[in-house]
Image 1 (cartoon, rainbow, N blue to C red):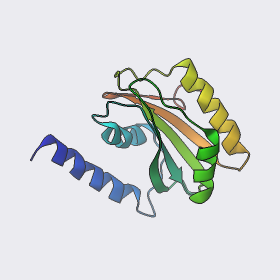
Image 2: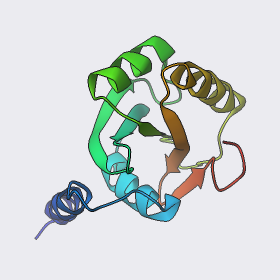
Image 3: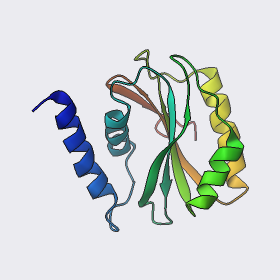
Length: 146
């Protein structure tokens, strides 16, 4: 079995587990593992959102924005529209750094604040923003930035 086949198989298992009604997103470590598989091998920045129900069960993971090797334009209006479309009660924001360094930039911190403020207006809680870089990740929640 090739590496790509193994990754695909692992994603299928994780998505099946995450989509069970009794699965609750409650650990940044578990979420980061799940997201690392989705970002594996990407050579461009991808901004994705995990839309969650009121018990923090996964409704859907969706890529909302795709950028270049070192940036992606993020529009709060589109994130709010998607949260309403999925009837989400909470979200986990995420994106990757193709450079492999998950440390968030000042722009990452700035857009996170804007998204938290925009989503608060529609009563959607932002649980975390996870930045994936290679095999490492950075959780805004774990670092007290949420």
